[in-house]
Image (cartoon, rainbow, N blue to C red; front, side, top):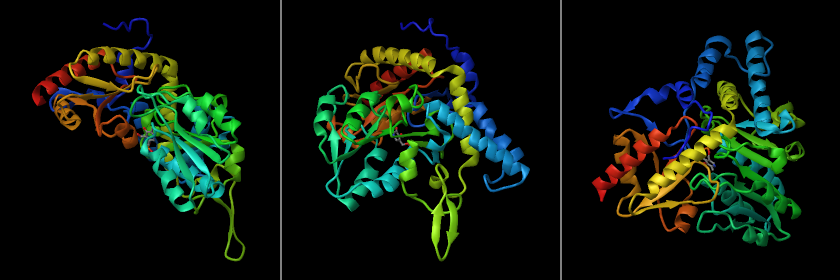
Length: 413
Ligand code: PLP
């Protein structure tokens, strides 16, 4: 049995913050292990919506009245919380987007269109989520640059020698995830950034899966761009972040036009644009969601990412040991120090059948390609089951999951 007693995480207290964890599914207590897709929100985040819409709902930045001032102040306070969360130097380097996907599309469309030419090269990795593949493919089809893929080994670890060998004088950008959503691999971003910069290329980091598990320091890792989503870090859906170095963002053209992002608009002289970050925040943003993201980051800080990470690592060790006992079960993604993601396939049992049947027992896991089709097909599968853990999961839940899985496998084999 894995020992958790040395860790100072009071998981019962943590769980108390999450009302959804008290519900039942199909008459069974919910065991929620789909955190890599979306994790649950603590009541401190949920309460923001009541408070905002009940007390100070107003459009931000332009208003001179009290409600608008209060909303603007709360919104901009979150920008500073995000800055601190990723250790960025300046608040103007923090842009709010709808999520990681929109943040990457912003870089592709604003930086990519202005800086990439036919014949250039962009490096992505075999581990990428579709949201860090497809925007580059769409742009490559228009512009004519080449996408090259950093390979993985059998554990799901990126081959760093092959990575170095992929660079040429035409390499302009490396776009890579910090943590793989399908396998949990944690990539050595600082080292990869050093190599990219030595070749005068930029590095964009998809941090969607890192934000809930890893302490992020964009300055120490020297990321040029870093993206993450609120709903994977105990916050709401519909909100995410793009960090970019101020000099890069300032030099980029806007990608969406509208209110908020201009300095002046004239039929005769055209438009001039606001300074960053507003240049990239056209239209009314998701105000309550931004403020709620701030509450989520406060909640994470209240426990501390190092403790969350240690707890989840212990859960992952425990799950690895228990799952390895199941006959015919193969774990995909065995990178050392991987994040709390367990992907697996079972001989003679379709992942989808497992997912549907285990839900009947109250256990929520994800099945399918996890938006990482190139990775899965490289490993010869088109779907896996994926259980992913958060700070509120317990060893007892892992045991229920494994017992339920054994029952389900018995039913379908
Ligand atoms: N990148 C990774 C590694 C992810 O896991 C996800 C979501 O699963 C995304 C990007 C896309 O995030 P969103 O759907 O919040 O934009």
